[in-house]
Each structure stands twice: as structure tokens, then as C-alpha cells.
Picture (tube, rainbow, N blue to C red):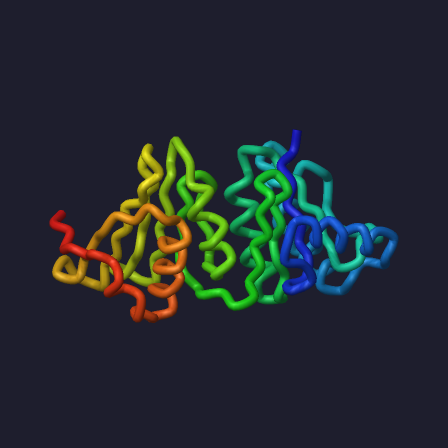
Length: 214
């Protein structure tokens, strides 16, 4: 079995139903230049590796009449590597990454560059408002946490407890600037995380923060 990712242009869809509809419109359409460019780089990098270390589940990707979409199947043990590579190649070309297994559309429109660690799915290179709003309510065992790091010692993180209450903490560069609180509403947690990523603190005083001692 393979794990699938699909690349498609940023902004062409905002829901999974729209993604599916868009991909249907691309069937039979000649391959777009950006797709051919990304596919060639993926194939070249894969060809440099021994066959046993291949990160593609097929001999090559691309070269089909799929318009502006690119389908990239990979072995399960290569998911993290392939996802990282897709962001590296696709984001500069304004392409989104769709994960049909998780039903996640990761679109760079309006993104904030950051190291985002999702406890259930690994690392991502940016955060968007829609991703924060989707990911926070879906956090679940065994690793129900999300961390957003902008630089060393500057991060915000949340952990969803068994009762559904979120522990929310942020650190702004030093132990004296490390604060935490508890929040029951995932929408508020997502909004605070997105505000922090944008250096917007107007809503922060509405929560009861206390200094975290490590």
C-alpha cells in the first residue's frame, strides 16, 4: 500500500469537496509546466538513491494528463521525508499539498513561516489561520499537541487533556516571558495561536495567564 499526496495550485479549493471537484476537472488535461518541473525534480532525487531507499511507490511521477495536479504516492516509511520534500518544491511555486488520508488541504495562501509540530502528523513549514482552526479541535491521543516555533525560545504550544481542556503556553524569548493558561474552547485556542504567530496580542488579556516555572 502507498500513502498519497496530491499537489494542486493554491487557492483553487478551500474544502475537501472542492478539492475533489477540482481534481476531476484536471483529468485528461495536458500536464502543466509547474507540475512537470516538480515531477522532474522528484524523479531526479529519487533516481539518485539505491532502489531499496526509494521514496516513491512508482518508478516515476508526472508525465500524465492531470493538468495542474500532481499525484505523489510513497511508502509509509517515507511519509515524513516526502512531505518535507513536497513543501520544499511546491511552496515556492504557490502550490498546496493535499493529504487525502487525513483530509487535510495545506495551502500556503496567507501563511506564516514557522516550524509547526503536530503531535499526530509530524513537522510542517508554515501555519495558516485555517490550519490552526482545523488542527486544534482535532488533536487526539496519543500525542494531542501542537507547537508553533518562530525562532529559538519563541514558541506557542497547546496540549489537549483527557477532559478536552487545553493547556496553552507561550514563550517570548526567556523564562520570564513564559506564560500558560487553560482553555476549554478549541476555537479560542486556535485564535490565540494564530494571533501569536502574527504578533497580535489584543485578545491575550482576556485569558488568565500565569508565569510557567520550568
